[in-house]
Length: 223
Image (cartoon, rainbow, N blue to C red; front, side, top):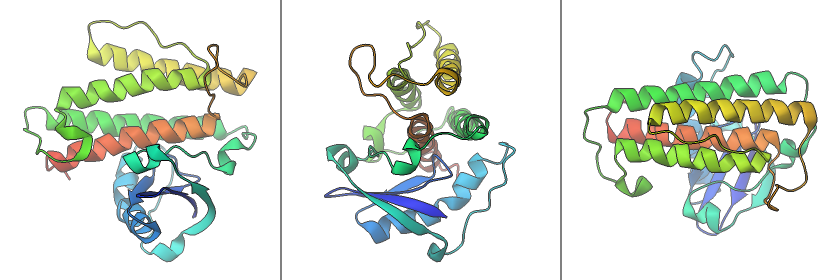
């Protein structure tokens, strides 16, 4: 499997190119690769109802590093930010369907984790500053609403229902990806914001959803 490394001063991310969302970090390259390999079975669980065939590797030798990218303060903070060359390539006709299936599966995995943790006291820990379950949900929702601007798309209006807001935001993301595939994207957003290639957009949203899925599972002892 081809992967790339995003190398910061304090943290390194390893991510697979063809499987958005499967990305883990470590203090160095070796640690990031170990973490990526270790979470392969969890990624397989997330994709179990995606309709895609995925078998996680059992050895690190299955990975081939094809690109090393410089990280940033965001990398060291704990979020991937660098865009690999792979994500800037023209999309194939089947890209949207496959990436949409992966992203939807990552959302379903998050929903299952949230549902499974209802009524459970989450263990405190360094990740996310010890957010409670609803706070994690609202954090993911807020991030996804903000990400929409990276596709020059406006986030939907908010309601007083968290689940409805999540549904509407996810639909807006799918609509934005379809519009990007059909019409292309501007070089800059309407307010001069940075535009992300659609492949990277899916990669970032899927990573964020799974990162908090696994956080909830770990803190609620669901996995």
